[in-house]
Length: 361
Length: 160
Image (cartoon, rainbow over all chains, first blue to last red; front, side):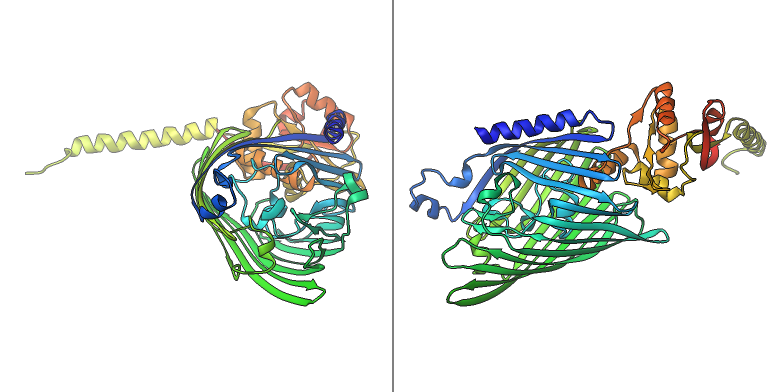
């Protein structure tokens, strides 16, 4: 209860502060109806004493992302609070930045790790993304999220103009997550006393924009993270991530793609085990009408089976093929219907999601 | 036996299309008046002229610092037609796409969406109260408003 009071007080503070002319306060609510069928293997759940397979439970879901940003001269503050069943009420981003120039900002705080396309373009407000879901590799909570998507520390981001084109860059250095029994746990500013051990995360992301005001972008990224673990069998994980991404739009068509190479050294008292996997996702979108968008996505992971690191994340979606339809009800509300065939580390199922999402105001 | 349109009728048709074409051209030049879209600021403002690229980025919610001060964009929503011309000719986006881009950039980078004004008096008051503020309007309209001045011409062309 005290935690809830603190969260509500925080929201009230943001609301109060948003009366400034230089502030934004945006709510991103969403409602999800999820239907899962053809779950395999069904026997596992039954043998564990469940009357019904756990994947069939908790089908309706709701979430709210609260976004706040304000400028005080060259000082910029940004906060994002995510309230959901999975995350309870998490302060996902809390950062203060100094505008060094029109193109460059130095941030301190907790922010998105500069990895790939999805993690820098979209996050908790699913209204902004065309699809109802994000790729499995970009999940950010619990036992389905294998990558450190939030870090706390220093971030420098900016752009270098090249006539009518631009190179964008992001460098970050800070404290990465640690590995708990429920998954990766980033630095939690609200609970620093019990934060546990956090070690180095360093990341870099570079991209080329043929025109800085349109969303076409191609680039690459790399990160190194040391992840301390509370698991008895693993002392820490030394993780290297490298990859490439692109977003390309042409009239009614849009393609988003990402490629990840992830190498993990699992350090134990008995020695070190090295394992690596490759993950990719490719999403295609076609605007049938300004209000109707058809989309499809494929994602897959190579070398995922029996990977000792991915086995820590049994809910990680390592393969998925999906198709969906987005209908923009108004200028700030959308309905999405998505069908997917999902393969996780140890099970698979088909899923239909009906999602309503919005951005207010 | 010859089929189709008789020669006289064909000549009449050609004459009709020729005259119609001339009238249409005359009408075009008569009604498609040239208008000029400009960026304006208050007379006291010290914001230097901006490039078209800077204007596009500024109105997409990105930070712009000139002469050490933050430039603030004000959206002129007093005329839906003017707003549409600005988006089409300067930002090169539909209104829906622009709103989504704006939201996406602010969500990603922080900052604010440029405030929109539907009342001209409020817009002018906001412009005059902030020496770093700029907005867009028709040049002929801007020249009739005391206390503001044209900073940059953004676009000029026929308006039908």
